[in-house]
Image 1 (cartoon, one colour):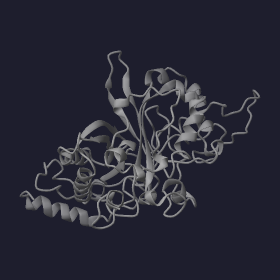
Image 2 (cartoon, rainbow, N blue to C red; image 1 turned 45 degrees about the horizontal axis):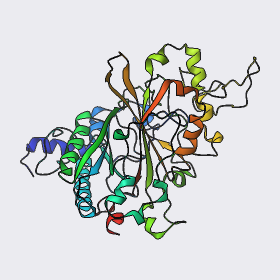
Image 3 (cartoon, rainbow, N blue to C red; image 1 turned 180 degrees about the vertical axis):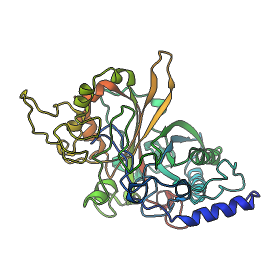
Image 4 (cartoon, rainbow, N blue to C red; image 1 turned 120 degrees about the vertical axis):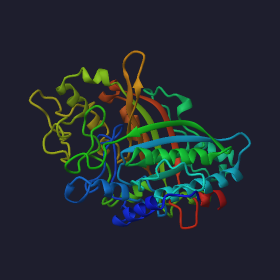
Length: 423
């Protein structure tokens, strides 16, 4: 360990002692279904919906060890980094084991609000853990590179092509995937920088994307966030209180399938999509048109058929003109689980803005991340429906895509992915 300022360390320890570890209570998502985003569940901004004091925000820590990896059901953080690595030429299983050991050790330290090690840069020296989470996953190609093809689950097969996709292959897939989230930008960057240095000669960054969400406490009470289209986004996300939540989001501990795939028990599959929003085109639409496209009121997120944000849309309701109140191609209708055989996924994205293009249009949108026990029963059927006629498709563009197997949370003294790499 490098020498550190004792006053800073004492302050940090006192800060960490004021607030217990955060529970996995919150979620994040897309506008009732397919392609958009949410904030966090009620309660993530403090008791009674009050804004969270800054000291509490800094002190909140998320456990590294557990049944599931952090960053899946953790309440949405204000800042995020999503990136993928490819193993270096000549690197294989041995190098992957050493790398996952280094990454897991750094993630454990950083999530506890500690320095990363002897070479810590000091970027986050003054801060607590700030709800930092680091989540690791493996891409389809990882199993070829490490000689583990027999242990590659069928659920990790490449996603089908969708007609509306305009994908950049250099900004998708990859051997290894990392999601970083925190409620402080410096804490998130510190984790990003640490893990990138930890990769050393074993792996090289394939792509990286940076995102953000509303800062916890920015609103007077806990509420669903808005996306960059200005829409309240994420009302229909599955909740941990749902009887079938675990079954839909996490791979079961027992069940059909070869024993070679048992290492994924307790894990989940992450679909990652970079979705550009055509904001200039959207902003030219009238309020009524925007609401017709989504199928919900812009002011409060209530369905056009009436009620409040959490009221179930009446998809059978006919208006005075003899047409469905929620149009046949409205996003809320097409993406509804009832319209997709009950398909469900836990959507937990970040918004992004990567500047203004030469044509004057913003390069902005959604880093869409969704979690499910099986993408063929979660993401794929919903996206197929959206691809065939979602009114929102005129205002978004899918530009990058990836699918990753995210193993269960590590046990004490275990690194992430150890049952796969050493089982």
